[in-house]
Length: 399
Image (tube, rainbow, N blue to C red):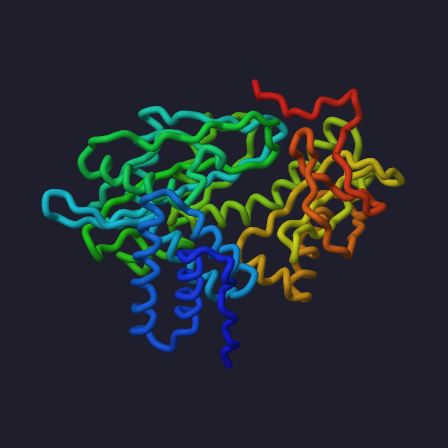
């Protein structure tokens, strides 16, 4: 039975309110014909927003729906992702479909993870691997020739939309420029992080894009190890001192989420490994504290690492919950416990056996001076994570 829809707040802007109402109507639709009716309205509104770059109505609608209507949120986020990372363009009277693709490389290390430009040989290897292991036959491909950090990538749906358009033109006509990467902020090196190869593939309308569409025997699970093997030799020189795992190329936003899933446990393992190294201690001498943080529900878990018998937080780790399925499951007690159990299991695999769980939902507090998140100590107080003064907390470059 459908829950009655509570009309969007009159304080919402007109564009945001229309998006909200249409997305809820789409979620409540009972047939494909009605789906198409609402989708056309939402798509027309989204196209105007993406082209103009004025995303406030979209952001407002997503925020409202994430709190009040999960089905409507899913509908809107799916359409926004699809519209921004794919398009149909016309060149000399011929229409083409374009898809923006990301190929994540999940890295973990004791050192700084570098960003690198891909040379001609590496680009040739990448292109060959894409055509042999991932893409359907006779497609056109263009690649941003760099391992890109998340901070350098598009930071909004509008920016992704323009990346897609630029790369589509470049792939088909070889005219234009590659998207301008965002500046890398100055921060300490990450012990576990992702790098991405961003590409655009161009295909005739309604033609298959991926190999597993063209031949059902080439399933994703068969293509993935072949892709990893093909890329290993090219990526190893680019990531000195790093262990890494490649993710099979797929649609842009799908793989951002997949990389995040794989990265979260690695962040914990890399942090414990590094603490043991710089403090010359064994993992069983440490204790972890876990608490959920957010305004109305768990938006992220923060993990603090202390020495046993001490309350000083040496290191803090954020386990984000920005995947939509996480946001829903965090509201369900069983799934909430499952997430915490996953975190505890990773800690214990890393050798940290003593784990304290704080039951209260805590406020998302940050340091006013440096912007770093505050982490809970064993007493439930939110504090800045600080290593002893004689330890350099910045991972060094591998030489």
